[in-house]
Length: 418
Image (cartoon, rainbow, N blue to C red; front, side, top):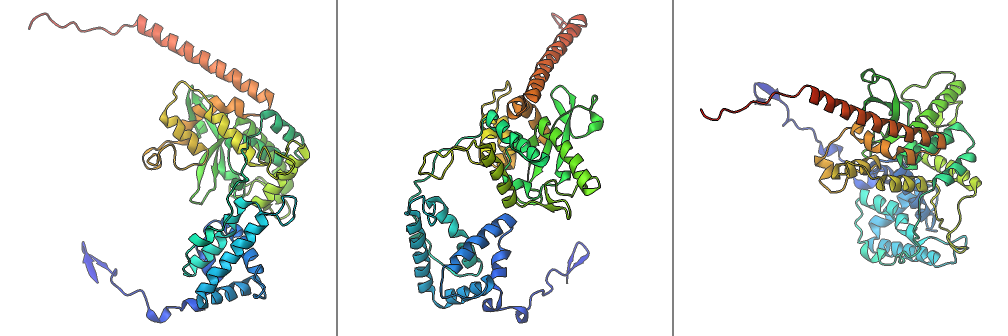
C-alpha cells in the first residue's frame, strides 16, 4: 500500500488475472459487435445490413446468430478469401445499382457505402483486419443525388389537413418550429419539454416565479437526452399550445397525468408503448402521402423534391438562416447552429470556448418564430407582439432620456490651477 497525504492507497493492488482471460474464439462475436455500438438506432441499422450480407452467402445456414459465428470462423481461417468475398459483394451491389430504376432489384448508388458499415463494425470489433481501399474502389460513382428543398408554409398546412390525430399535429408543428430530426422523438418524454417565460423585454427564464406576467413565449426541448448527441432546442408557442391538447388526450386515455419520464408519443395506450423512429417515419410518410403534395423530380427518378420528414428540418434551417436581426453577430450564428443540433458552431473552437444558456437564444428565435409557425392566427398574433415590444422599447428609451434630462449628473469642474 502507498501512503498519499496520510491516506492509505490500494492503487497498486493487482486487479487483473491471466486465468480469467478468454480466447477471442470463445467470445460471442455478436455481443462483441453490439458492445461497440452505443446508439439503438445505429445498432438496428447495422444489424439489418449485416444480416442482409450474411443471407446473401448460400454456404451459411441457420439463424442470424449462427450465421454470424460461421462468418467469423471463416474470416479468421481464410483472410484472403474474406477479402475476395467482400469484393464479390461490392460487385453484386454495384450491378444492382445499374439496373433500371423501375426494377424491384434496383439499389441507389448512394446507399451502397451504408451496406458495408455493419460489416466493417463487426470485423473491427472482432479484431479482423481488412484493407478496405480496393473494396471501396468498386463502389459506383454517386450520381443520383438531386437537390431538394424544404416545405413551404402552405404545404405544411395541407399536410396538417390530412393529419389523423392531435399527436401527429404536435409532431408536425414541433418539427417545423425546432428543426429537429425525426429520430429525436424516439426517446422524447414529458419532462424534456418546458415553457419559457418573459421576465422583461428581451429577458427570458424557465423559472415562472421570476416572470411578472407569467407569459409563456415558447418552450425548450431536450433532444436525444442521455446520449452524446444531446442538445437543447426551442419550439414555438403554437407547438407548445398543441402539446397541451396532447396532454389532455394522453391523460384521458391513460387515466392519469403524465409523469416527467413518460413518453409523449404512444403507439398503444394500453401498455404505454412509445413509437420507434421507424414507426414515426412511417406515420409521417403516410400523412404526407395522403396530402398528395410530394411530386417526383422526374418520372424515372425515385427522389422527391421535398423529403417527407427532412423537408421540415430544411425549412427551419432556411428560415433561421435568412433572419436579419439588429445584433447580427458571430455569436448568433453559433446559437443558430446549436438550436439545429450541430455541436460545432461556425468554427471548430466554438464548441470548447463559446458557452451560452438556452435563454440567450430566445430573442433571436422569437424574431424568426412568426415565419416558423403555420397558423395565420398565431403568426399574426406574434407579429403584433413584436410591434408592441418595439413600442415598449421606444417608450422605455424615451422615459430614460427624460429622466436623464430632468436629473442631470453634476459635473465636477477642475480648478484652473493647483
